[in-house]
Length: 190
Image 1 (spheres, rainbow, N blue to C red):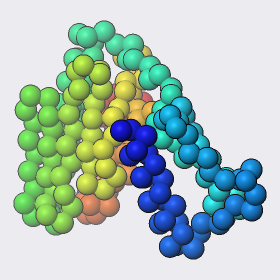
Image 2: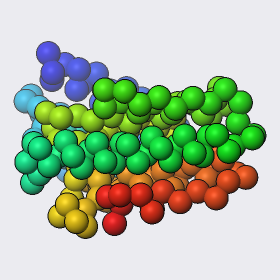
Image 3: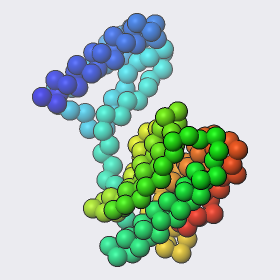
Image 4: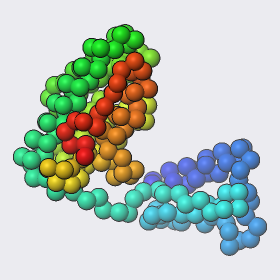
C-alpha cells in the first residue's frame, strides 16, 4: 500500500514538473529514475534541469531525546509558556492597530489570536516528547526541543536550528508594527 502511494506521488510530481517545463527527459538509461519495489530508505535522485535534486521521502536519522528529566522539563516548559503568555498579553493590550485579539493560556496550551487578518498562534507543551509545539499562521507547524543546560538553554527547531523565540522575533514585529517587540529577553532563549 505504501509503495502504491509512493508511485502515485512520484507520477504526479513528474507530471507537474513536465507541465512546468522543468522536467528534462534523461538522455540515457543511467539517468532514469528507477522506482524501487520496496520503499526507499532515505533519498532518491530525480533528474531536473540537468542537475540532480535529492528528494527526502522520510528520515532515517534517529531523533535525539531531550536530556531533561520529567520534572525539569515541566518547570522549564511552564516558565517558557508563562513568560510567552504574559508577554503576548502585554503586546496585544498595547496594540491599537489590532482588533479582536485574545490571549488564552490553560492546561499547557497558549493560544494567541491576532485577529482575522493575522491568524492565530498556538504554542503548547508535548510532555511525552519533551517538546514545545508551535502552530504559526505564517510559517506553519514546528516542534521545538530543549537544547543546552537549564541555565543557558533554548527551544530549538532541529530542522533549521532556529529557536522558538527567534521565530517569534522574526514574525511578530511584522504584525505589531507600532510596537517594539523583543522576545529575546524572555527565559530560555539564549
